[in-house]
Length: 178
Figure 1: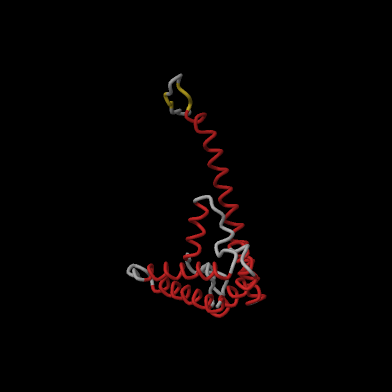
Figure 2: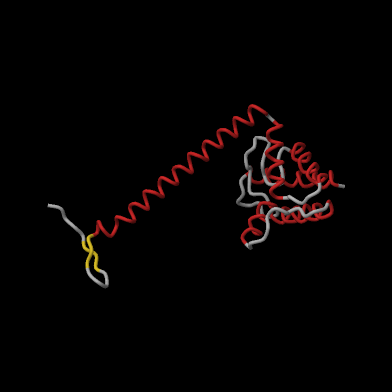
């Protein structure tokens, strides 16, 4: 004989199985959706890594170019060139993407992008639409990095190294813009 659990509600009692049936279906669908998303992300990362291995720095530059177009759609070509050349010289870009194509850390510009998105503002024009605005933003990012680097206790050596590379990137970026 099957035992059943009853739940009391304001109208009458229901069988536990009937009460939970829709939740079980939703939970199962959620697990499947999550599993699909993880496998797709795994597949994309694997393909991206293979693409980088096959095409080397050119693919990384193309990837960085796509990222730049997302964060600085209105920036002049000279700003884009300075950004890409500085990234090639330093080995990371202002969004924290290394030469291996991996996100090394959460960069200061990424923090700005997230903050803007949270406030409902556009995230496609972080560097402005002129060389002067790009220099201003780069200097603001450097100031934020300096403040952050004053409090390195609790950070790993890798986190400190990544912040120093980010700082070098922005210094090189500014140098190329001047």
